Length: 111
Length: 114
Image (cartoon, rainbow over all chains, first blue to last red):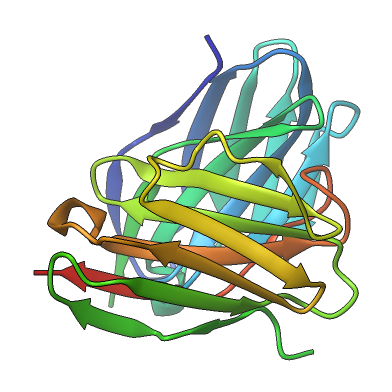
């Protein structure tokens, strides 16, 4: 069964600290993996998209990693800011015709 | 680029009424998607168009839901008759081509059916 699981469900950190969000997937055939950021009341915004051959991709203070052997991805946020408070959604493409969404990690950054 | 534009942003309607949600995809994008997001089920794909043709409507919950894309720059999602369980945020999204490319989401239409 195609599945994407994210952990933790929620996370609270202090401004300036780093954090790492996890995504485990069971998908076949794997095509690519994406991370989206969704601010409260807004639509999801793409952070990164990685194919099978890529194991790291950065977007500013966001760095995503992909281990296709263990079927795990992580999103690392460096020097967190208040504006990083959002839900982060891991999405995996199955072949060319399906996306499987994780349920997201809710991150809250406090001053 | 204006991004994906949706209207209305918020809609409150009574059970049994017809609801029409509208979407303008990013110019030049060939694929358009309608998603529904709820706390319980997260993001779910309702229907996906490619070059104005519906490719996958397996996520449309039931016959009360219908979607059209009469041209490359406009799509509607209609619910008739609406029910309280339809209350959700409905997102329209577009991509250059299909599910392989980056998908750009609109800001959503927040629907409440009372």
